[in-house]
Image 1 (cartoon, rainbow, N blue to C red):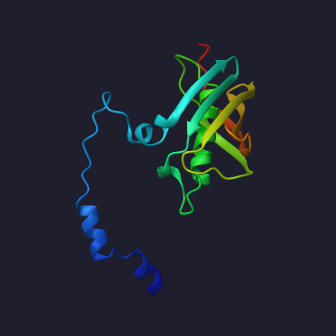
Image 2: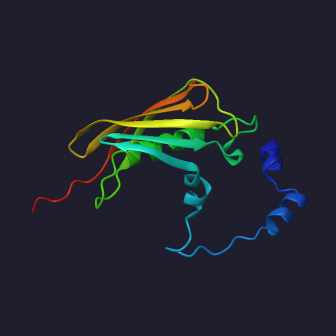
Image 3: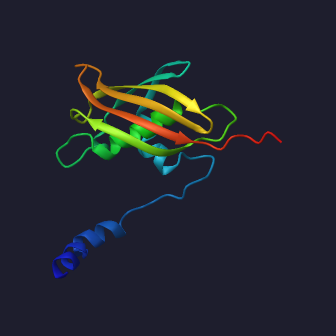
Length: 158
């Protein structure tokens, strides 16, 4: 317990660094959200078709782990976002993620350019399934593959 307490206790220089942070007030509707500004701004849509989206994503250093590789959490987030985008319909509320299954095959370095391809696997009632593949755009090496299930409330028929 003492080791945990010691690990979690802020050191003086850490505390001073945090106190110097300046966080501007978020202006709803005018400024991108933290999430949009931090993560989504790097995704570029290349092609869109029925049940298909192809994107390019340059790995920013801020999304890498201690070894300089794209973190597994960032990969999961990309699969969630691009997998959800392929089933989004204008005027309907977004569906929420229920489950993701991800296979990690290789690693991506900071500044690598990734190709992300998302396809609709199908729909049944309020449920949808997607498949997302992440590849290194230059080498063609498979980074990860994910299957993603989502749920959205159907519109009332009354």
